[in-house]
Image (cartoon, rainbow, N blue to C red):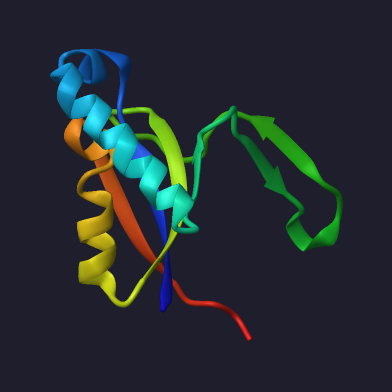
Length: 110
């Protein structure tokens, strides 16, 4: 199995405008994914970290990435390939509730 990092983007307005039954089914899908071993979490407040030339750590509150929707959460999922990973996250809350989910293949370092 390969590992994939997913990033869910979405906002409260899009979530609330989605039918409650669709949202509940999406949360049930996430619960099944967690039960199957996926690591799923809600995004907290980000901090940027720099240590250029190993000359000292500098931190800046806030995200480096910017998008039209806020980052809502992350997941690490196991799937046999990219197509299976896409199928898995296509039922996630961000995907069905007017947001978007990015899927990034994780190439583990040796």
